[in-house]
Image (cartoon, rainbow, N blue to C red):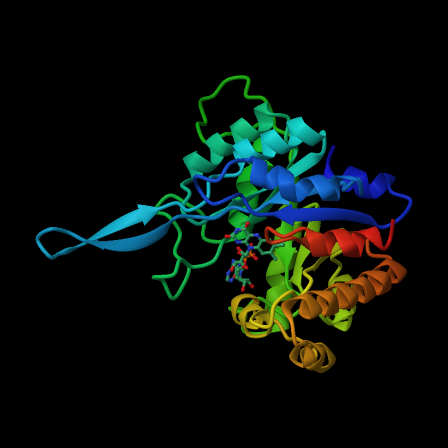
Length: 317
Ligand code: FAD
């Protein structure tokens, strides 16, 4: 079922989870072990992130460096199919511009369509570590809105090969990313909202936000979207703080602010266990307020660890 159908049919705020594919070589069982305890909460859908290749330099026998492309995590098609098959839950594979030509994207979408996966979260992807700015493949997409255009075309039966006869339209529900604290490259919020609106005009069905720790950021973002006639559902993304390191790592990686009271509480903790507890309590409070606000669904970033998300969602069961 499509994410938008789940939202339309819901009588209360829904829950969804986001997981990472395991590192290459680790079995699918690791995913099941972290998802098993979450499935009792009947998530409406499970997102699976996409991780593009990285480049590493290996020293050759002659002393010169050789540049090699390494994929640390497998793609999303197999893992989404495995999760759907095991739990009969809808999955949302993330598809990105980075590292993909238009043809490779088309092939991935065909596979997903054949598997009965009818949701995708369409993203640009970040620059790879060796790049300052994102660069698209020669025959790839530069922005999420362009990739979205390709999915939208396929939903209308238009494939890359114009000579295809009787091409079957796909039927993907298309999600996109939104940034309550602004995307880090956008010169200001007005510009970011302008391009978010372009994604909506290009056919986006719903928005999932970047994580935030201050709900006011989400409330303001929703209001700003409404002022700009963006009326599709906006799903807040929540991540429980779980280590002291994340106080600096999350702002650096995701370009967000951590409110003073949360920073103070984490800094007072003497053990990792105590920090996890602070993170859980903070996220429970966030979730409570978001439900009261009328958020359509709360999307939890598990980042491979589910015990804290289990405690948060469990307190609303
Ligand atoms: P876009 O919407 O293309 O926007 C990128 C930037 O360009 C913004 O600053 C925007 O304002 C600007 N812009 C957009 N269109 C134009 C235009 N036509 N001209 C000029 N400027 C423009 N990354 C992964 O690699 N894998 C994942 O699985 C993944 N999952 C994510 C899930 C969520 C919910 C979120 C919020 C992010 C996720 N990301 C993931 C990270 C995401 O790929 C990065 O944040 C990336 O830098 C931007 O992606 P986007 O889709 O928002 O890009």
